[in-house]
Length: 82
Image 1 (cartoon, rainbow, N blue to C red):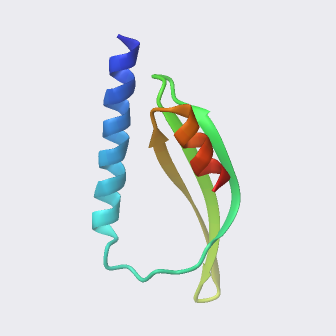
Image 2 (image 1 turned 180 degrees about the vertical axis):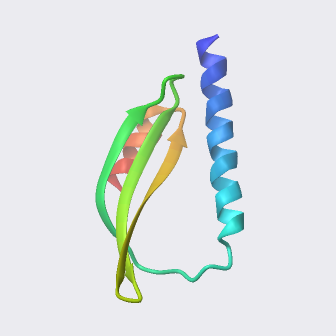
């Protein structure tokens, strides 16, 4: 049961990221600074790399988090190192 749930969670996270990209496809691209990044496992076993970033726009400071899902450890660790 655990392995199937892991794949379902992975695909839900991928679809969520795609839906967010479609909504912001017309936004301007800017430069951000990565403040921290971490690798963690969700409750169901999906591996998530969370990248925390900061950027400035119109003299205001903003920050955000991008979470990238993975199924295999080696791909997540390579993404984290990059």
